[in-house]
Image 1 (spheres, rainbow, N blue to C red):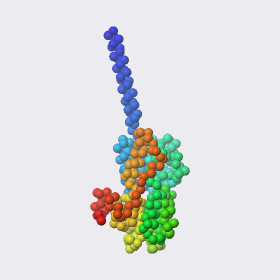
Image 2 (cartoon, rainbow, N blue to C red):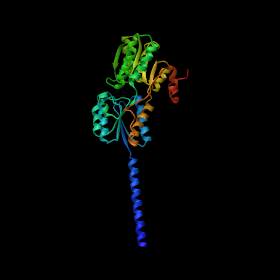
Image 3 (tube, rainbow, N blue to C red):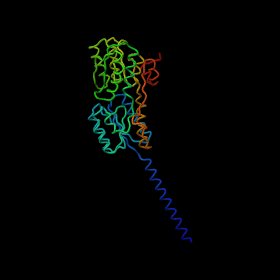
Image 4 (cartoon, rainbow, N blue to C red):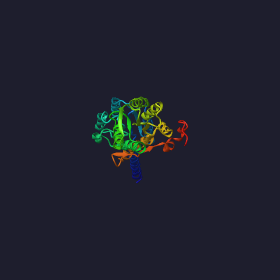
Length: 327
């Protein structure tokens, strides 16, 4: 009898140990350490610097390792970056493609490796839509339209110049389309337009060129705030502040300060910190909770910022740095 009881105790101990091991194995499976690759288009652009930091911080808070790579405005480098992430066997890739076509083969390769791909801020052409799980961004045509609506409401019909940003980039193409859709039927004419990388230096140079050709411009549209800040500098140097109105996009703090000071007429607020956080959360939920977004397009809300709104949008710690005071 004693021997039988001893045997039962041993059997129970074995069963408990097996159960514990199975539970531990299950817990380890559910707590898998995921690794996500992030490919952004530019390393020096302040907008993407903030977005990248926000993405990495959000992933870290969710217990996910993030590998952040930037393409330095070079499509070939972005293709190489994505291929490197595939080789690193990441669990997902979050990418902001430089243009509508160039990175497509690398994204196709990620699909072939069964790595889910998500787009943020920019996306590939619609014919590649089957290659990504979700796009987290804004309706860029509506962003352009917001700026166009300000022009039509605030100015008499006249001439416009457009600093378009990178050729073939969705961010540039869709914004331009929305802007033209609003202003051209209202009697405004685009008399000067040029593609370039989105730097303040290019904004200054291109706006100078536009003003030499058309000193009677009513408005200079810029596809981002860096271009707009350069254009505002050119307008001021030409003695045309208040006569030529500069419009940007992104809502970066220096641009918000310029809008507050009325060196720029307006910018569209696309908060890169919030945007990056929301993009990372979509990817994290997909990996950790197996939760896909309800729609393939996760569309965020944009806001046109004019001088009456700009001060409140500047982060309080930066107001003194940019020398802005409430009006």
